[in-house]
Each structure stands twice: as structure tokens, then as C-alpha cells.
Image: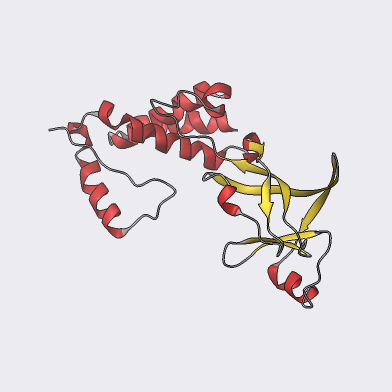
Length: 201
């Protein structure tokens, strides 16, 4: 009998219940319909590649990020699949940008303990996950952020992405590897693990 395994998104937490539910189902995978599992196999293959490819491949400039008068950035404007921030800059004059230097929250709080305002020179990501610029600009501004952003997961509505376009064979190998893992086929898993790693190198 074919049943669907529900896998949590990589963006969500893996719980104990998720783990104990998946393993027993995976052990009877030879009796399962692999085709029905393919959306999850493709998702896992893509996440496997995203973790191993040079993230420079995913470099992008985000839309302007609003910053309030107190220096707090609106991180809700960040894409959900953001991997890491590469650079932050501030437009001091039309088409004239200066980079903001990243510093620790503790250093910037100490440096700006008297809460001065002025042209931003630094930014930090706080322990609470907020992003702030220092000094506070005393008025609403926008900043330019360059970041590495993982591509959308391939699906029936997302037919291609940068990985499938630039490395189609690599993606095929990774998906075949995940299908072999799903079907508990150690020999094929090892074969495509080796082929995937050779292409990644």
C-alpha cells in the first residue's frame, strides 16, 4: 500500500515525533510508490546541494531595506531563504554608496552609549535576531543589502532555478542519490554519492 510521508520543511524544526514517524516508514520504502515521494526527494536533493555548493552562486541584491529613525532595520523584508548577508551599504548621495562595517552588538552599544545620531557607519545583528545600524540615522532611510539567498525549491509551479539551469546533471545525480536513499538501496546510494561528490569538486 502506498502512503505519503510528510516531511517537515528544512526551515522548520525537526521534532522527536517527526524523527520517529519517518524512520519506520522509510524502512518499508521498497513497498512504497517512489513517484509519489518525488517532490520530497527533489526537495531533499536541492537542500543537499545548497549546503555543499559555493554560496557565491546565490548572490543577489535585495530590494531596499527600510531603517527607522532609531536604526532598526525591517528584516521582514528579507527573503525567507536567506543564507547569509554579504554586504550592507548606505547611499550618502545619489549613486554614491558607502559600505557599513559589521561589528558585534556589544561593541556598538558601548561605542554609542550616549545614543548619538548621524550618518550610519556600522551594522550588527543582535542576539534577538534584529538588525541595527549605528549611529542611528534620526530619520527613516533605506539601505542596500547584498546577500546569498537559496533558490526556490523546485516544484510543479517552480520548474527551474539556478542550480537546475547551471548544473542539471549534478541535480539529476543528487536526486537519484536521494531516491536510492529512500528506496534503501545502499549500492546505488553509494554510486550516486560518489558521482555527486565528483561533480561538486
